[in-house]
Length: 460
Image (cartoon, rainbow, N blue to C red; front, side, top):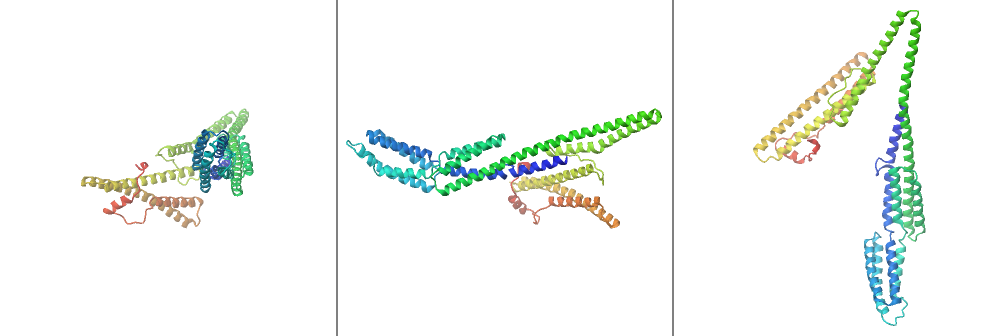
């Protein structure tokens, strides 16, 4: 059982380190890195812009070769598409403005070139200011171009989520391989050294955090297996103890049977006494352990899914662990009932004050005042009940202090009772904790109702 508890605590700590949700622990650390990496990759996603630029250059040269106006019209359409792509891109604002300025320069110079190229006898060989503008646009795009960067990062996220969903050990090597590909593409690209350093640092941190998560998950799997193995060992131990007890009883019965040949009556008496003792022992164990435990399990089930009304019988001053557990559970149920009762009474009083505030005529006001008075009476009753419990704990403290003055020392049981009484008084005083304000009446009640927070549905 101790091994099981140790493994359970280790598994809980490992899960806490890995992250109980996607935004905490190791998961949150590498998720922040990959989100930032994805944001930066969008600034280097110029594949479509380069493709459209190549189509513009191709149609520009076809215009010079064939001297047909259809190619000029295609260039116009592609220029419009290129502008829309630039405006919709996630490139830095300065880069977008520079591209748009160069595009405007290209468009203006291309019109003059197209007019000349469509005239008979043109020999310009497709050169001019528009060509220089196109080359400047291409240089700007290549300064932000990393091939398939965003696509590969999306693949990286996909394999990461596959691992988190399925736990298959084949996915981490895929993540590492994709990260290696991205690293090579970034290193070989023509983007600025600062952008390279930022992208590579984020990728390195992401990969390190992801591999740490993989290692942590493996540790959780191993610890869980050990915990389950320890749990599986409990049943065999119980069976072994039962078998050992049965073997002991059988051996004793054989010894009694052998002795019965010399003294049958004595053997029968001893056997009957042994069986009676075993039966009484079983009944005693059932009554003192099994029944209270079953009762506590039922109350815990009611506490989780309903409203418990019963209590576990206890022996005042009992020193066994079952009795201590029952006393603690009863105290928990009492504190819960006190808190819920006080909360409901407070909410009823708040509702009554709101009703008083919203009353439109004397009849509604009288009805609201009646409701407020009833809620206040209930609250006073709750206060009286809490006062009674505080008095009982105070009497317990006085009794322990008297025993201490007589005995001159404090037994462990009295120390525990002092601690429980003090904690219970502290809990009850926490329930009674209110703001240090004078009581309100009349119009002050209306102002208090205005300032009160809106009631939740659960308070009804």
